[in-house]
Image (cartoon, rainbow, N blue to C red):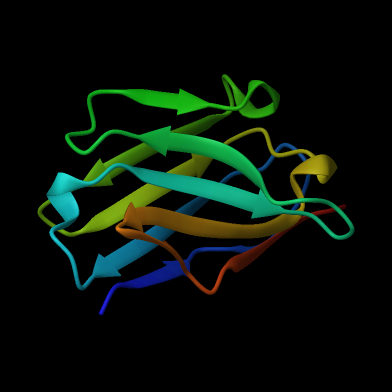
Length: 115
């Protein structure tokens, strides 16, 4: 079965960096685009960044452009989200997502940006 396991979240000061990882299994990872979403308390889940199956095409939300970078390693079945210059408004639970017939989500990893 499809499994997505996120890791790398934590507490960081404003201006700091984190790298999130999402380890995937149960499907042919290199055939599918992957996405990162986030959900802040009291807000709807929103798309943060996406990457094509081969990694050559990426997109990101305006709010994170120039600060967040999505990448993938198809040999490791892992997608990453490098987050630089973090701001308090980036505080949220971050989720990995893939659409393989159905839509699958990981359990999420908490990112808290606070001094």
